Length: 142
Length: 481
Image (spheres, one colour):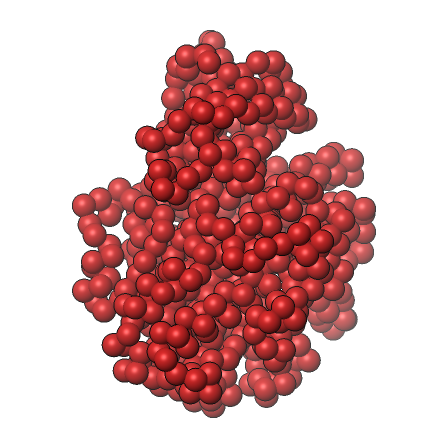
């Protein structure tokens, strides 16, 4: 799995959670957005990359692609308990993302649940690039 | 920004149509001076103005005093659109479709329950599936799920969860006709199936309360409430099912906006004409999610009753648990309203707003028709909740709508930071309130100071005449996700 640079942080939105993520590529920024989102849900300690999962999403533009990516991960978490640990983004364009993930399955005896994320919204959505540095912004409904 | 906000009276503030070019109607914010100052601090006013762009919007873009910035429409927003000319917008409903509240009354008084409170809260926590990753107790096939989506709370009653008369005291009888299981995605089914009959997380709760104050004796009596009475409030929605339905349809609406050439200032206001295939499909899907939530609250009520019966070791007759009312506060309803003297059918979107129908309205249950519809306003963990009653004034002004609860003043992260080092559970216990939550940070995120004071919010809707104070309920114990 690829080494991820960059990171994420949260910003103030009253009833929701604002998430800023960045990286040296669009893929890295998207991965850090996912890491940020899951940081709200479960403590990353105690997650084991034991289970593979392939994700393919498509959208009209790269902002919608970010929402589609996070929405797919949320769906996988709720439907299958899948918690990503390691990410590798393969093909990536403004309209399509393919990724291979390694992760864990939610086990309440091993994992410490922090909270719920209902959805990734289109509010204040941004995907931007500045001199090779990519930054994404998304508001999560929590 | 063009014009400024205009004060109309102590509780009404207009966002003029020239505030932002493109507004089809003005905005109208219900607030007092103090709340307005907070409202003006974030993007709420901008969002009230943005909502006024929606095609077919009638009269105004309304904002209740508990308004706070959400995505697209603000939370605490009411938007009515014309059935023929107007649009339907999933962002005007929210992700948690039919997040709502029900209030249960009992025959018991506070001192009868107080000695067993801690055990009751613990029993609720173990009996009611709560929190992220919790699984419901009911086994469903895909076909079962479809029945739930079509029948809502009716399915639950038929399955043995509660009584037929509960449906009479539920908004829309706990079921919106026209739900279509075929317009629901496989993903929504997969998220929904294990979560039916679960409480959820975040600000969802089951709270044991007592009636602390009665403001309108006649109305309270009609609702079956008396001083010091033990009540239970349940706040929950359509869980991952609803969230997925909203997510799915926002994608569809994004395309619809392009197809129908609708100009919007905010992507999250994505919508489609009510008369379009996309619009009709979303409405049918929204109804399915609403029904899911009503079935859910019916089950949660049933398990709550079982916990009380077993915990207090009394008979159902002695407990006397019954449903006062159940309201939705994230929903779009097709309703008939008088607009400039003419009857019109409208799609009334209430996102973090509650229906508040007046005395005499046919949709108000028979037992309450003389006094008006009960309006349930959950507060927060440490402070009060309220029971209000709908009025004719609300019907005239806001399409029969009022606030839904106390809005947040602190983001969840801010609340966690602010609560660092504090043991919220113990602070509440010191005040005699026992709370159990499954999420590690839930108590901090949901602490009382993270919310506006609901008393202030209620004061505005009462003074503005939208819904009148009937009773104040205070928490004794609660479970949260």
